[in-house]
View 1 (cartoon, helix red, strand yellow):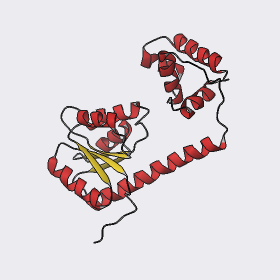
View 2 (view 1 turned 45 degrees about the vertical axis):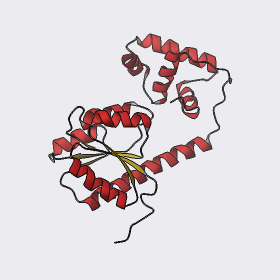
View 3 (view 1 turned 90 degrees about the vertical axis):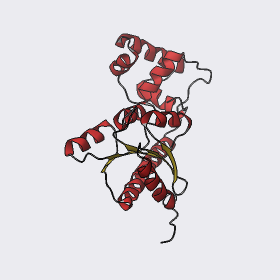
Length: 216
């Protein structure tokens, strides 16, 4: 069997499991297929890794000490820097309600242990292709529309910056108010202040401006 290149070229995977044998087996198999694999033993350690590093995909055990897979994925999905990363859950629980819970929590793929390494590789490749299609689509739509123009000296307060990040994630004023523990009216006034400062017309333009300028 020759070492295959191409599929996994330079893709970094974060593998999280508290079973050292499984880590060794899966890491070995994925590295053989050309992937770069970084590992963590639990969710807490994985979050510390994610602070320093942004992998192309996360493969994560569900039941782990300190922080389980569900909590980890909720953290990953909340952070705009990591929210796009595909997540594959590995679990010993194969009941349909377990699968449903895993997918509803934010995992993209749910695989039951024991699994065939070939199937794991196929799921990883499929998830990475899907993620790159989404990224290309976003880049295309950004290219086709002219960049949003605002006065270059716009200064946002720290609170406005947080609010605009939530706006860019598609959250409604009510949801942002709940997240920041303030009234909806307060959020509305922050949004209208930012529209005034930037000369933009609506929340959609505000969101695009934040994304284009890497605030979100």
